[in-house]
Amino acid sequence: AQLPEPVRLLYRGLLRVLLVLLHDFPEFLCDYHFALVDCIPTTCVQMRNIVLSAFPRTMRLPDPFTPNLKVDLLPEITQPPRILSNVTHALDQAGLRADIDGYLLHRAPYTVLLELRHRLLVTDVDGRQRFDVPLLNSLVLHVGIQAIAQLQAKGPQPASPLSNCAPMDIFQQLTAELDSEGRYLLLNALANQLRYPNNQTHYFSCVLLFLFHEATIEQVQEQITRVLVERLIVHRPHPWGLLITFIELIKNPRYNFWAKNFIRAAPEIEKLFESVSRSCMGAPPTPPSGQGRADGEEGVVASAFSLGGEH
Image (cartoon, rainbow, N blue to C red; front, side):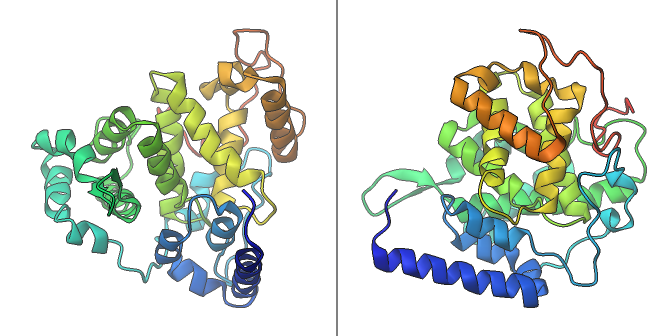
């Protein structure tokens, strides 16, 4: 869309301010990423990427293009990020936190899941219902934080720790029940946590890949791909966790990415995916029609996001 000149100047100026913060004070963006992203419209993809690309100056980022990078063996991947924003404010304001915490603890009552979609809606001044984006963002991150705490309390798991658990009940229920707009906002809320190496980046990357693999309709897989790709086709910087997740998705035969129908929905769409893939991992595979990859090549992070213990 064409922006009025004053708005365009304001936008460019804000981008420059954020780039200065990214370069000189990255910890500020790391600590307050949640509150900052809450204020950034979903259409301002590059602005959001700048915030989410920040990482502590004391950290040396592993190269996401390293062959067979074992993400789950990185020392930083078990550490929680510091978040100074009030993550649960919107949940508390909506009176939703107690019900969510109760379900996460007891995996009951099931009515919490059934009512959740309607409780994420608000009525605007024109009387129309819309999704409360800050509430959805708060819900996603709070559930993720609690899920990580539960996984750490249980210790190492022999099989997939994501399936058949209360946090994934919430994510899968919303993915299945929300309409296209609501699902897009949900997937964006998940992708907003793909940042520098930490346990939240690892967890939410696993969640997105799990939802892609377990989706019963291709529309869900298409929307997950859209959320990732639209963040990759803008100018750099790109968040480390975003790159790791997308490389795993397109390179690991578990996800059979290149056999999906939406990849070849139109010639320009296919060229877009080939271009993004080439930027991430070299030439994309060209499987026969209706088939997955024929070379059996493992994903670039191999076992990093293994959700079923198969690696």
